[in-house]
Length: 181
Ligand SMILES: [Fe+2]
Ligand SMILES: [Fe+2]
Image (cartoon, rainbow, N blue to C red; front, side, top):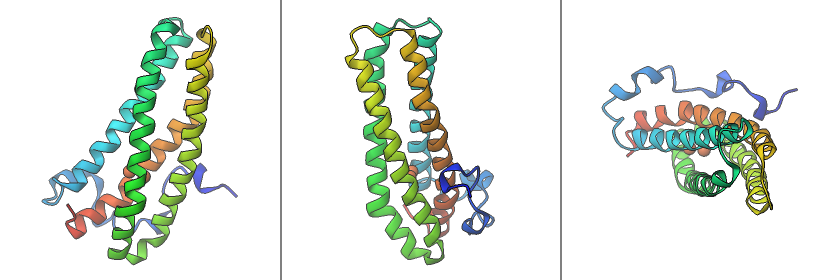
């Protein structure tokens, strides 16, 4: 049996509102400009930060970026991603998800899944922080450190992208339906 974390899409029975609010019509919805647009914007920022972190690590591994120039960038981009993602999950878990679940009780299993995702992501964040700190404290980082960080970033990125996309499919239709802002 595969776990939630290996999924390649949301289980069909958890997607309750997406048919009524398909993704391609979100921007045209009168309720889009507010919480929905803000939510997607936050997620886009996480995707961009992850891409920058990955591109830097690849550049180091391929000898196109000096490891000494890499380290301050890694420190800045890495702490930005870790702090923002952690804060984002906190407000989702403590404020938004409980409120949304009250509005749509039949989506309980979907919110349970997102909650488990956050726990799993926190393990991945911890793994990334450990790897990045090791690198920042290393006496003399070299190209192989770039390749090693990619190994840590790969599963983190894959799962973060899965989570962001599935969360959007669950949450944005609910925001539009209930006109949350
Ligand atoms: Fe989330
Ligand atoms: Fe989110």
